[in-house]
Structures are given as structure tokens and as C-alpha cells.
Figure 1: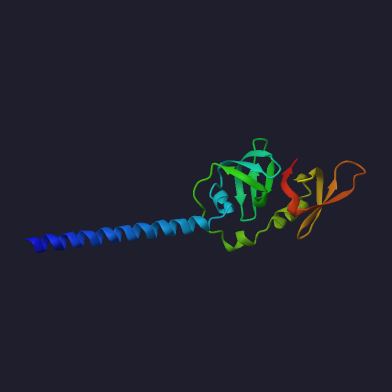
Figure 2: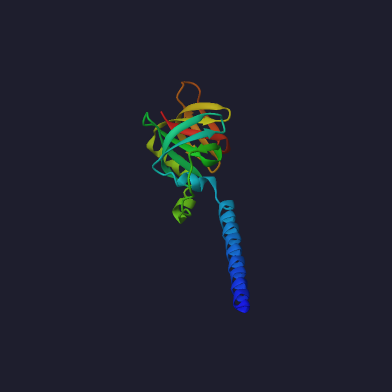
Length: 172
């Protein structure tokens, strides 16, 4: 009887050690997965849902995510405006949930410049908000790191804005 009890005790200890080892492994894998999560992936997971954003400029937006890519978000607000936000301009976002699946090849290649060129082709009036202020007019050129905006105010001409400074592009 004593031998059976000893073997049962050893078996129980082995199983407990294996469970503990499994729990540590699961925790390490979960931490590694969270460590590789990008904000853009969590924002993409909210596609079709409302989100609040605090931008680098200090402005707050409440809008629905209509489309999203690793580099940008397209939002729609209550006034039916479209808001294009570089993910780099987002300082805080809520509420967020789990991460979206990895972006597809097309999503990863679709840069903010592609969206801006589409706006330029449409000839839609836009407001470009950046760190230095806001400018309203029409996009006339979209370079790799800047946009040219023909301003709506007479005599103000065309202004060139660095994309790194852009916080928000909205339809007017």
C-alpha cells in the first residue's frame, strides 16, 4: 500500500509540474503575441464600429471606422464628412478590443498617398489639418512625402504640406 501511495503522489507531482509548465508557456506566448500587436491592428479590428480618437494636435474625434489600413483610418462622422487620419497622428483611442487578423498584401501596400491621390482626382474640397494649422482647398499634387493644396481663399495660392505633419484630412 505504501508503494502505491508513493507512486500516486509522484504521479500527482509530475502532473502538477506539467500543468505549471504549460501555464508558464501559455503566459509567455500570450505576452509575446501582445508585444507584437500594433495600434493599427487593434483599430482595424473596430471596422464598422464607433471609436474615439485623441490626435497629436489635441483634438478629439468620435466617428465610425469605415476603412482601415496599417498606415491610415477612414472615418465617417455624424455630419457625413469623411475623415482621413494617419495612424501616426493617433495619440489615444478608445474603446479598443482584440487585434484584427494580419493585414492582407493589398492593405499593407495601400499607403495614405493612394487615398490622397484619389481625393485629388475627385476634385473634392478638403481641409488639411497639420501641426502648424489648417488649410482648406483642393489637392493638386500628392508626392511621396508631401501634398500641394490650392487654397480656397483668393490670392493665397498653393501651399505644400509635409505628410509627416498631417493630423487629419477631412472633406468639407
